[in-house]
Length: 119
Image (cartoon, rainbow, N blue to C red; front, side, top):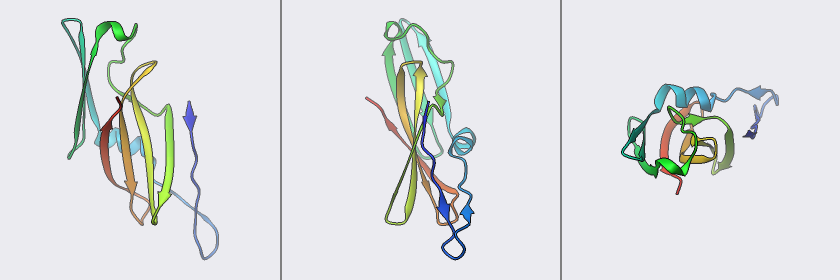
């Protein structure tokens, strides 16, 4: 597990502000399907605005997840006043299929989730 922490402070009194949990946002807004057919594994990850499909050979992993699993790695970045969380989704203990990229608004709530395939 590799999880970064981010601390956002109120500039007036330096109290810590709460950031929406990226894993809860993913749970609420991202769906996945892992299908096994004819020695192939088809992985589909979907949001309201995005979809990523990845295909693997069944033999690429000994064990496959029933769904894409998020949370073993969380990375944060901040640029131009925008906080972004990158959360890879795993399809097996050793393989990641997709990055969920969460962009936060000024209210520190997730404003959008985009998906990018991991090659």
